[in-house]
Length: 203
Image 1 (cartoon, rainbow, N blue to C red):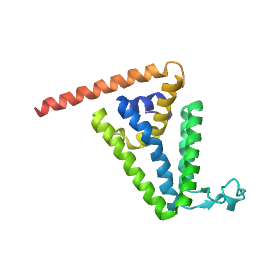
Image 2 (spheres, rainbow, N blue to C red):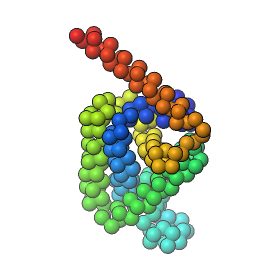
Image 3 (cartoon, helix red, strand yellow):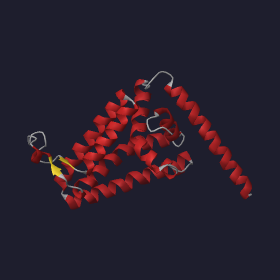
Image 4 (cartoon, rainbow, N blue to C red):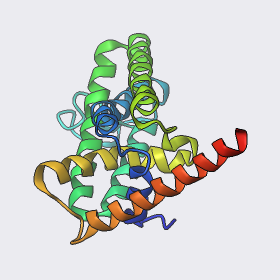
């Protein structure tokens, strides 16, 4: 799978998220996972306060924003999404940076100990919701069990594109959704056939 092949990425992830209720659960929980992951990284990974590098304290929110692992992850995700699709990728990048800023502010207000507790509790809640969505409604294991890195990279962008498509009818290019749907249906059909063959062998 090409690193920047949005169609294949989206089709892979979509094959694990075809049930409307499971999709809705992911829409609710995926971006909070991003936010709280950054919340957990803030107290654990100080590098440089941006104000120490000459940035005005008004820009750094009185020293709250800093160059750390959370910032590096945010930049990496933002650039990856923009490379996949400029328009929706730019929106995703803005959301990534909004999560970084918001989580940084919250981490400072909560303090290191409480920030970690809130982050872990939120992660537990969100991941539990997603696993229940797969078990109860999708009837299929999450994508991360087959491709961990791809699932973590694409989940936030997948959710955003789903919303943009449903609300605005957005497509990265004409025919994108139809091509992805065909790949998703083919992938699900193949998975069901393999599952049926496995069940037949067991019986």
